[in-house]
Image (cartoon, rainbow, N blue to C red; front, side, top):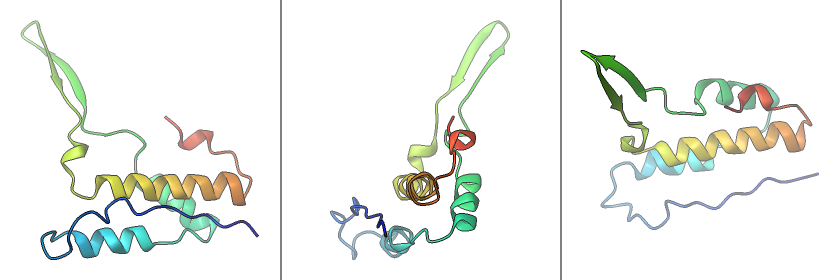
Length: 101
């Protein structure tokens, strides 16, 4: 039986100084153990930042950069999505191209 492991990259933060630490720890400890959960995670967490936009106003092109990096849980959510994709492809043998942008 194959086992998926990951490294917790938010260990460098001190739990007392980081108010997001309990939520980060909870997300990092989530195990993807079924294909239904993995599909749900891949559908809920987008592969690219949905807030990035470029539009034209009075002949000027205005670009709004991706603001996802401002989310304090961004890295944990991206790693959770990656674990779900890995589970689907490695364990379940499913095609994950619909979830890749």
